[in-house]
Image 1 (cartoon, rainbow, N blue to C red):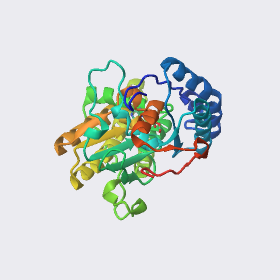
Image 2 (tube, helix red, strand yellow):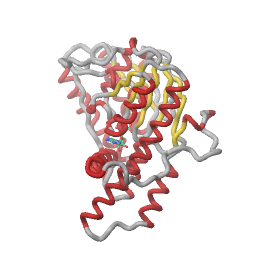
Image 3 (cartoon, rainbow, N blue to C red):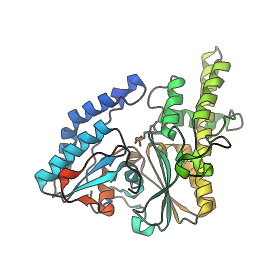
Amino acid sequence: MKDGREVLSNVVYTQIPLHRPYGGVVPEIASRAHVEKIGQVAGEAIERFGGKIDMVAVTYGPGLSPALIVGINAAKGLAKSLGVPLAGINHIEGHLHTPFLYDPGDDEIAPGPSEIGPALGLVVSGGNTVWIDMPEYCRYEVIGETLDDAAGEAFDKAAKLLGLGYPGGLKIDRMSAEYVAKAGRADLIPFPKGRPREGVSALAGLPAEMCVSFSGLKTALLRYVQKNPLPESQDDAAAELARIVASYQEAIVRALADVTRTALRRKRYKTFVLGGGVSLNSRVREVLSSVCAEAGARILMAKPKYTGDNGAMIAGLAHFRQNHVEDAMSLDAKPSLQVGE
Ligand code: KG4
């Protein structure tokens, strides 16, 4: 990364095919694959870049401890051998940096972190759904959360239930877009949108209006498919499956839109920053863009290739976060690291 924004070299090795047979991430498989691949991936990134390295950055939480430890140990070795500082970066905060990344030669570049003013952040990924108040860049306070599953998990669990494969978010996105292009939204099934039930006390003192909850929605989907078997004809069954999928996606998107709208009403924000794997979803992008337009906030979203986990967001944020550790060897994994800690 150059100056925290220009991506000079970004190498991603995805483990998805290894976890696909199990329908979710298996921690032991994840850490073993990290150990096996990290040298090759880091080596390739350094080789493609070919310049002088001033700092090494690594995510130290939140996440699965065995996987974090592999990354931290490799980064310590690299920082020590290069004689440069090591920065420990929060994975969730990293996702919020993705809209600021650009490639050499890009003409359209988002405003820089120092120009965004008071900003509302939303990270929607496989492990997190969290709204973050940023009075200025790199100052974070969590103001909204999911009470149970993350949005990506809600997509993936539905995909598993409906036999669509893992991970299911992208497939659900595509099937829904095709369905809506043909049939519109008039016949969508009114699944309960993913909001906490009345009277449910919210997490960690967060008000219910700032929370989502996808467990009831998942149960509603299960009940629906149990009660309404798919039609016999293959064409009818495919159309009905697409209708179910598009309806389920709509319920998730409406919940994300509700909480975002509430947050934008509670405080005046100049910018809305969206990150995480689910931020690739075309309906999420469309609906949140219109919520922001209504509220007069500018929306910043990552290029599709930077929405999923990547190293560029970690190294990029390190430039702005300025929290490198003097003694590289003292950095430890923090599986429950809090945003802003
Ligand atoms: O950020 P990410 O790569 O990994 C972490 O969880 O940190 O996010 C992965 C998640 C998966 O749950 C995947 O199903 C979801 O992002 N996802 C999508 C789409 N693309 C990926 N969900 C909805 N629509 C998509 N287009």
